[in-house]
Image 1 (cartoon, helix red, strand yellow):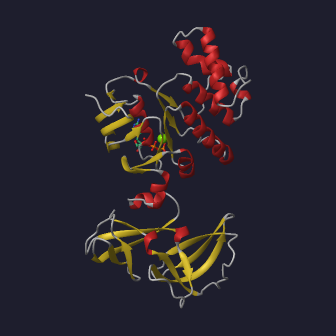
Image 2 (spheres, protein in one colour; image 1 turned 30 degrees about the horizontal axis):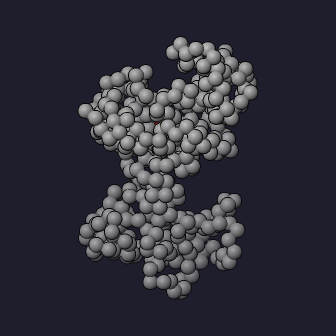
Image 3 (cartoon, helix red, strand yellow; image 1 turned 90 degrees about the vertical axis):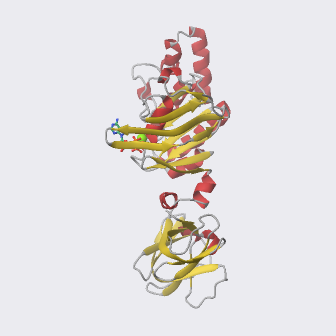
Length: 366
Ligand SMILES: Nc1ncnc2c1ncn2[C@@H]1O[C@H](COP(=O)(O)OP(=O)(O)OP(=O)(O)O)[C@@H](O)[C@H]1O
Ligand SMILES: [Mg+2]
């Protein structure tokens, strides 16, 4: 049985149970060769399980795994073209950087001189030239992470599996390492599959992102697609700050739907969701795409709005969150750059309208 050889990884209805716990179910994943692919999702969603199934560290309860078109479901980890980078640094504490990086090659009985050359090349790639003789405890967290990366890359496998590789780093270092990982992946050209629950990390490195939650692949797309056009309500809520309205469809055609959301009736595009009258739906709008209007301000025909009461503004540095209360009691944040000019002062308790352009709202059936 052979599959599409343009794909580095393909899973077919992949599933894993632990006793009565379903860790993963019905996952059909397709990862293009040479891409930087991210598995993003909340804790306990099944990301590590999926990564381990791909690497052969865990056996599936259902489904198949193909690597470069070849079915490897029954192959052990060491016979697969994959290598894993773990969350904890997991360096050998009593070995120098060079010996740590060369360890896998030494096990394979690669000649000493070749080991040294390949180790040097890898340390150069990860920006650690000259660190050969350092011991792990003499390195910072970010440097240890680089050594681990070099140790995996030196094995020259086709697919690198990274499980929360930056989780132990502080925010600033994590950002730097994101750019480094991306650069290294582009340089070596092999496929990276990177697990994280941090959305900024995901967006920084990824060519494509798959959202994994409750043991399922929720949806998959580029960073921009996932952020701007989330197909599923779960994605809209998980990524970014989002207002969700729930309601019932009153009228619908192929282009638009009118939805009763309790505090009003609003119109929303219906091309993607294709809902029908009486369907229960949700509508998501990014907080930075919401606007506040004065109650008597005339908005363009493409604007939708609901009444609201202004409460306060929370200063967050780059942005501020203008908080309003809706008639149903829900609190909503409207994001604006803190430095934005011309932001009118609104008094707490003032009546306003919470508004948005119709094309910025997404309609979801689930
Ligand atoms: N060896 C195991 N035995 C029993 N249950 C397990 C085992 N490994 C994972 N699970 C369960 O499977 C589910 C998915 O776990 P998994 O580790 O894949 O999640 P994750 O998305 O990697 O989470 P995190 O972000 O916290 O690392 C969880 O409910 C977990 O408790
Ligand atoms: Mg995990």
